[in-house]
Image (cartoon, rainbow, N blue to C red; front, side):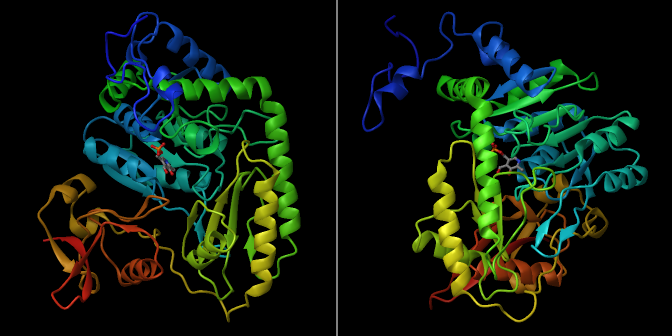
Length: 461
Ligand SMILES: Cc1ncc(COP(=O)(O)O)c(C=O)c1O
């Protein structure tokens, strides 16, 4: 066929990018179905995806898990309603709550003292919170967390369903779960109503590719489709959809071997790293800590997470996923060869020998464990984010209410949500993160005529 239609590249290479990319980048032409109204090849692929993940129905997403999370929240909770969600949710969950003008009640994850990370939400926490907030219309949790902590979704789903409301699971980091033996079940298998997977995060697929799964009868599927149409582009990329199909098809045909050697490589790596005397690691057991998330703790050493990140990058040419105050995080997937593991082990054993223990713990306050929100500013997130604001210097912000999100990126979990009180500990954590060179979104750096820089933050007037 000669293409007398969009896209404008006409399936021919233009500039530096490979010809194959352009030739595959088609649009909704005859026989190629339409993601927003699928009844042909895309519908067939979505059915196959649902079968693989044990879902009732699955949707391809080409605007990332972000689009799935926005749609799930918008569909499960009515405009102006209330949601119960874990405070360590990704910013997209907050954006969903903002768009639908939701009241938010929080589940505060506990703190893993040894590693300085937040734990996954426990069933008990959900049970207690639901008793205190009977008016919530849905519960949203994130598992595995960015750092790989896995929640007991089966127990949580039972508790949530006992209240007659749906459970949404942001499983963006768990698209590999439930696909092979020896890995945790995915949340569809555990009874969650809406489950979101970033295929691009933990499986070999192109960036932006994701899946939304729906189960049971608590979710209005027409409404879900409506929101997917709203939040996703009207020109879904066939390159991206093809990439999801490619990844899932490969897993169906060759997945068992790939997952087996992935798991073996992770276990072997952990074994070899047990020789370290100063660096510590969260053991990957596939139950509490996901395979593939290597969390390297620098607590009790002279290093910060960012310093370790930089050493591994500059000296060993290993680019990690992220660094935080007390740890760095490396990711492994089924598409890593043995080199990924041997290079990491070699580098970490060497670094371990060269660092010394520092006296005592790096004192670090859990940032996200405060329940001071609406009561202080008297404003919900959506009201606070649209309210009149002013810039103040960061050190003057203590005691004021945030008017903007402040996120560490990655992982994109808000340190501050609009409407929240800025406490002393919060201020010093943000300052420390900034000084350590971590990426802190939501601050403004202003330079005066003498070149002196000040950090400013938006607060409510
Ligand atoms: C927990 C979590 N949920 C959702 C997202 C958004 O995923 P995506 O980038 O696929 O839109 C992220 C991104 O980092 C995430 O970490």
